[in-house]
Image (cartoon, rainbow over all chains, first blue to last red):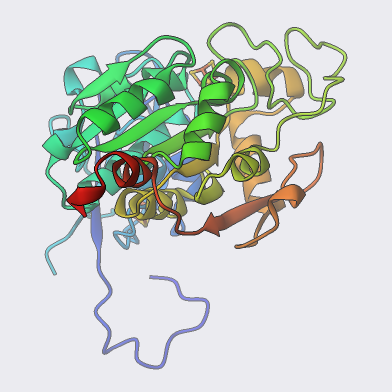
Length: 85
Length: 280
Ligand code: SF4
Ligand code: SF4
Ligand code: SF4
């Protein structure tokens, strides 16, 4: 993970990791999750869902399971779950 | 290759138990913020730990008024502007129910404006979540009582000549005992406010600004992400701000926060004091 300044105790603190789930048929491609993920984890994929909306997809390993994409999504289409440590 | 690059079709969203999933995807347009406000509200209901049977949601008419149709607990989709009187009825018939009104600015503050001020005056113990998208969305983008001065709508193509309501001031003047304003981008604050409102007694009014890219944004050259960027850049969080200073003006910053949180006897408490004095 990229840090702006590495915390002194970074090797002692357990940083949670998240796994992103996307319910493809609900997404309307608004891009809010992509724009506002603090870790820039998501990007638009090249694929469409059945209604023709562009879906987000996971692009990096940096998800911190902060749930913000899940909170912001108006469609109940994306959520994060803590990864097994 | 990132190890988490997986998408699953059939997984359950954490709020799935509160949603009528058979009705999803909902009717709200791509980029509409109502779904985000609704999600924050459902999260507060879930986090409260209160049995879902002790909740009821009431909505009026309009885009936001469709909210009650997507929640998987007792909910009522009422006639235009009448969500608050309906909610009042539920509360008086069964005081144990946490009644949440989820509706829009047009429904609650224009056609239902009288109900809003009188429920606030009585300090009726209900939670009102007012999604404010500054326009009549469902009917085609007509100017609303909340459209800021000089913004364009389908009926004010040259710019709105009127002054809009300052909703927190209206609620305050009428007697609401909890008043907050957030935007849908501040989703944690929205759900904290709803949780506080559920946990307290009295009339709580939570205004949540939300983009309507189709009928407001399109006519004002604001894409949905532009509106969110504006919420981010132009909002100032100022708890306990004076309600008279909360006007929403063209190009100016928007003040957010929790403005009022006071204790006053509720309607039901006053009613039983008058009619059943021996109960206490
Ligand atoms: S949970 Fe947080 S870090 Fe992970 S993708 Fe969503 S917004 Fe980004
Ligand atoms: S916020 Fe939701 S609807 Fe919008 S692009 Fe992301 S997953 Fe799709
Ligand atoms: S018309 Fe506007 S408020 Fe209604 S669903 Fe569409 S974007 Fe949302």
